[in-house]
Amino acid sequence: MEKTSREAISLLFLLIFIHFYNVKCQENIINRVSTDSSPSPSREAEFKSGLKKIILSIVFGVLTGLLSAALCAGIVHCVVRYMNRTPILKGPVVFSPKIAPKTVQSALDSENQLLGSSPNGKYYKTALDNGLIIAVKRLEPFETGSPETQSKSVKRRIQQELEMLANLRHRNLMSLRAYVRDSDRFSLVYDYVPTGSLEDAMNRVRENQLQLSWEVRLRIAVGVIKGLQYLHFSCVPRILHYNLKPTNVMLDAEFEPRLADCGLAKLMPNLDRAASGYSAPECFQNCRYTEKSDVFSFGVILGVLLTGRDPMDPFFSEAAGGGSLGRWLRHLQQAGEAREALDKSILGEEVEEDEMLMAVRIAVVCLSDLPADRPSSDELVPMLTQLHSF
Image (tube, rainbow, N blue to C red; front, side, top):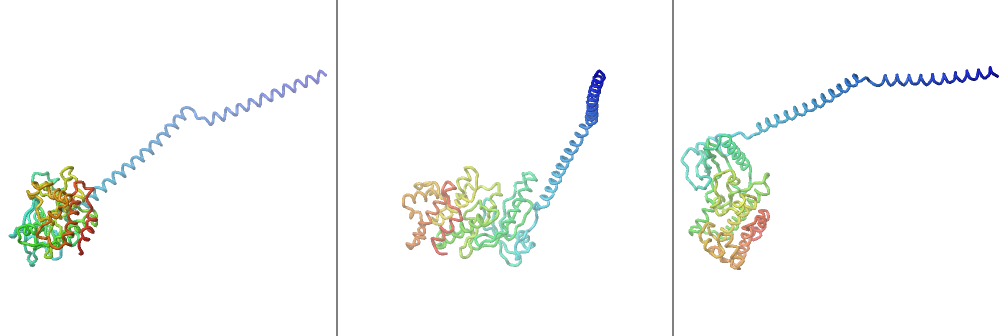
């Protein structure tokens, strides 16, 4: 019994020893694994430092690539702009096969007949060596005191404008046939129109040297508004006239109007339109010019055709409701006395009088003080053509 107890106790101690031995072995294995898998503090610092260097290298590489690409793109853009920049040309630039550059230059150097003048230049009549008669407009010289870079910029802008105008094709626009740039001015070459301008024609009407029927006057008005419609709605980019008045409306032998100097006024810094009587109110109030400003100028022209009066006539400052042609017409229309405004030399048949009274209404709405109240040139074409069959 005692022997059996001793064996049992020995077996128990053996099992306990084996248990504790297994636990110790497991602890040693865990410690080894954890020791092998966890870097030492120095190795961990080296690893983090290397990772930072890799990240910084990638970031700096990306930034350097982006900056280099942007710099290259900027250089290429500047080179392309410089290559595409319109060069400043000297001498004749011809757009018509009927005109030779040498003949234009020789014609400009010879004696020319003065046809008229305006605030931005003078008109001359001259003949080329081939017998073709042309009209030349010599623009006013540039300001000599302006910096060289500014002067070149103005010349380049005028040249670009002229090249664009040379591509316009419409029966109611004057075709630019050529231009010549001298050191300080441009000379524009157009077809010669023997009838002269609408201003010339109306002056002759006032002096009883010319009779213009209502049919002819309406044809002139329709041609002018069709020319504006083409500039405002058919040209890309849109072109504004900026200086529409009778001196810039040329008449051919059949009294078909052609607009001249389209868009040139905005390039003339010294041009004064304030005294012309054809500029819209917003041009002076906030120096803003839109296509509705051209419509206002057309309204004055239509009023001149209807009344026969010059808008600068002192009569308007003394007339009832006057102050301007537009205010006078509006006053008479509201008073039901629009007939009193019509040129007595064109009053005739009852049908024509009705057409003229309707045209007075159109002129009054074109001369509204607010641009939003004026019709567009696209709306005016059917309004006028419906007055008479063209």
